[in-house]
Image (cartoon, rainbow, N blue to C red; front, side, top):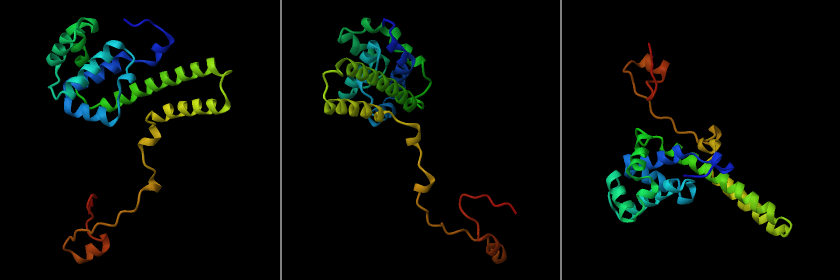
Length: 196
């Protein structure tokens, strides 16, 4: 059981468990998304969920099937099943989610919380060392904080500006077979609904 600290406000057991639940429900899709978004062990706050994540990744690296039973067997062989809460903990992760469609959201939120914890730690370390640091050292430490912050997926980076989209050449329209109507409407265009 985790001890309550200020840091706990920057962690969500439910989100972290949901990631494990998604993996157990849909291995292939979930593991591809995890690799794509570069989710790491260090992004997890809770020790028991970190153990589950490491175990799942170990099973994947061995090419073994990942489900509740294989995960439980792996943890039992490693003598970690009881320390994470037993079968109840593993099955509890799958009750958190119904499918893996929201996995990207869960991962982005967990990474965001993880990065906030890292930034707080860096700032705390910086404040204790500030008297000993040169200006170059201070600049380097601030740059590392900026790099942590830039790792978080930002809402505005998820969209493309309309001005950045290059104009697509017009697709040839479909003739109606009526010359006057084709001249008036320029034919029927794909992707539009024409009501006469």
